[in-house]
Length: 537
Ligand code: NDP
Image 1 (cartoon, rainbow, N blue to C red):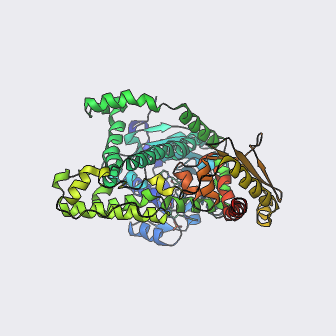
Image 2: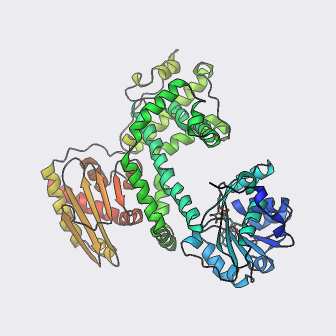
Image 3: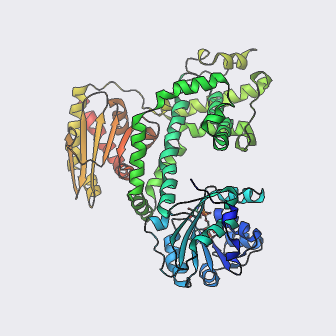
C-alpha cells in the first residue's frame, strides 16, 4: 500500500506557470484559493455571471474560458461532468498549447470516452475525496483532504511530477494521495454512489419503516437511527480508528450484540446485487444510459426526484429538522435532552405535529385518519410518549403502509387470470400503446409473488404483444409484487416509482427502461381498469 505525502511532491515544478481554474463552483473555488495560498499563480476561466463575480470578489483575474485556456500552462477543468464534453470541444481543446497540462478532478469523462484530449498535452487526475467546501476548510485548518491522483497521458515526461505538485498545491498531499487510473477513480466513485450508498439507504428506510410499524415514536426513531448525528460521529470514528477499534468506544453490551447478531446480515444476494451494479458501471452501460437520459432532457431523473420527495420519510425528516432547529444540521452530534428535561409543552407540540403530519400523509394515500388527537389530560403527552403504541391503536402510520393501496376485495387466482387475459387482449390492440412501441424494443415481465401467475408485455416496432406466463428469456425488465400491489398499481391507486422505492415492488433489469414504460402507465391503468370492471362487473 502506498500513499504519497508532501515530501514526495516537487511544488517548484509549478514555478512561473500560469494555472487556469476553469469553473468557480464547488471544487473550482476551493482549489483556486488553495493553489493561490500555496504560492502559485492562478487565474479563473468562467462565463460572466454570479460565479465570475464571486471569483472577482475573491481577487482573481477572471477571463472567458477560452481566453483563460490560451493564457495557461496548467488547466484545471472544474465544471460539471455533464457539460464538460461540450465545453471542452468548443472552448478548451482548440486553445490548448503543446505540453500544457490538463487536470481533471474526476476520471468520468475520459474513462468513458466522452472526452479524448489531443495528444499534445499531459492529461492528469487530481480528484479530492471531499466536497469543495471541505477541501478549502481542511486546507485552512492545515490538514488537507485526501485525493486520488493519476496520469492518462505523459507528453512532457513530467506528468507524474505535475500531478503530485497540483495535489500538494490544493493540500491533498498533507493528508495523503493514492495513485489510480482514470477508470478506477470513476468506477469507484460510481460504485459508492450507485451501490454502497443506495444499499445503505435501503437498510435505513427499512429500519425506519419497521420501527414506526411497531409503534415507536417517530421523533425517537429518526433521532436514534441518524438524525442525532451519533451515527455520523461513529462513521468518523471508524475512519479514524478502524472498525474494530472504534467498537471499544461503545459498551460491551453493544459490542457483543452487534458482533453476534451481525452474522444474520451476511446476505449472499446483497453481494450479487453489488456485483451487478459494478458490472454495469465497468461495461460503460451506465455512462451510455446517462448520456441518453441527458440528451432527452432527463425525464427519468425528474420522475425519480418527484417520487423521492413524496416519500413520507422526507416529510417526517423535514418536520423533525424544524423542531431540532439548526442543531440537527450542524456537524457536531446533537445532545438529545433526556425525556424529563424537555418541557411538557415542547413534547406535546412535537408529538401533535408529527401525528398530524403522519395522518395527513395517510389520508392523502387514501387510508383515512389513523390516529387519535394528542391527549390534553394532565398526564397527556408524557403518558402518551411513555406508553407509545398502546395509547392509540397505531399511533404512527407505517411508511410502507401509507404507500400501499387501499385494500380491495381479494382477487382470486382465476378472476385475476380472466382480468389479465382481457387486459392483455385490449393492450395489443391499443393505439396509444402501439404509438409508444414505435422505435422501441422492450419486454417487461410482471410476476406475482403470492400466486404462480406472471404475464409479459412487449413493445416492439410499433406492435404490442401481451401474454400470460413469463417469457423464456430476453425481458429487459422484471417486476415482482403481490397480487394486491399489482392490482393497486394497474388500477391507479398506487404510484409504482414510490412503491419500488418503498420496497413493495421488486425490480430487476434496466432501471431507465423500466421508468420509460411508466410513460404509458396512464394507458395501462385505463386498459386494466376497463378490463377489471368488465370482467368483475
Ligand atoms: P460545479 O457544479 O460546482 O461547477 C460549477 C461551475 O461550472 C461554475 O463555475 C459554473 O459557471 C460552471 N459551469 C456550469 N455549467 C457550465 C457550462 N455549460 N459552461 C461553462 N461553465 C459551466 O462543479 P463541481 O465543482 O461539483 O465539479 C467540478 C469537477 O469536480 C467535476 O469533474 C466533478 O466530478 C469533480 N468533483 C466534484 C466534487 C464535489 O464535491 N462536487 C468532488 C470531487 C470531484 P457558470 O454556470 O457561471 O458558467
